[in-house]
Length: 362
Image (cartoon, rainbow, N blue to C red; front, side, top):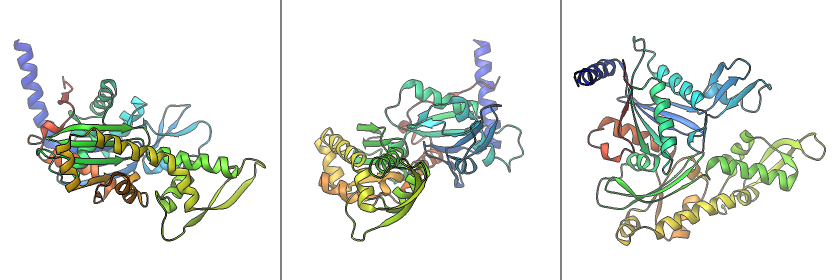
């Protein structure tokens, strides 16, 4: 008992000491991008969740923006990979090293050997206990002294300054890179939800498949994403849009350039968008009527980069017959929510998925 009591006192004291020299951070650990909020400073990092690894030596060559430039352009012994797939950790060691790199990056101006920040991480809803534990362990091993988890739709709702702790319905649709989270929130908890492995990355794949099937043209992931951002839409637009795309002709094997228009891209994206909209309607059907009355008044809130597809908000409004509004700066909604929780963690502790996990410093 005495040893246990001494360990608790030592852990509390050391946590306080490390806390004085470390900056507490909120992290949106996304499939496509990692965003980090530093307490008292705001969002300081917004970089792709990409790591370039030398397979021969196991050495990390680049992380973030520099690694993203290498995607599709590396020799066989170098791979530019995403350590997170569908919003969950697929490569534990690479995720750990990526987190350590970002944590050290924001502590460069602190004259301390090993920063030990308190960390809040946004994760997709409906992940398994094993997947939660993987995120916690990766954060602790990367240097965090305490790690908390929060559901991404909850974080997005808090980032939108919605009254999530009130007895009122709030509906959030967060379309990220790997997952789409649909949630109805009330009294600090999720009442009804859907988690889909269909989001921005799947839309990129839809465009790649469309070009291959319709034009016998093979394009890369970056090209498909550029097309989606430039002329992608969920419903017909007033102005016709088009852009050139370059790839390899699957018949001749030679380079080929052609023009693709917004109608063709809309056709490519229609399946993924239809699945997302149908799941929004299903979630509404499962929502208690009293909360639906609140949502009809407040509207459905859209967050995440995927919600920026032109006309998506109009399509959801037409299909659900409810008001829909885009969150201000939807790309940073989740990380802003983690930052708000970080600023007043005691008052908002009930919205967290897990209790804190501390690693012994002994």
